[in-house]
Image (cartoon, rainbow, N blue to C red):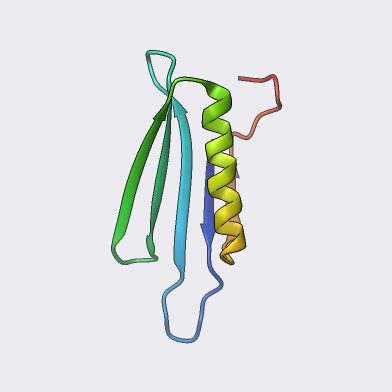
Length: 86
């Protein structure tokens, strides 16, 4: 799953963005990547690993909700599945 969120562009400031990606690794675990920064500028990347899919999805949703509360808007969503899909 992947979400790309962005702030509303201000006057002369470049918009900020957050990209949240959840991927399954080769051993069956899950990795949550959080990339954030200024559009066209510096960025930072954080990685968190989970053994269970449900824990990983809960962390993904918690991160998404926190960014939405901060004023970010979803610009792109990819690979969101049903509750029983893979």
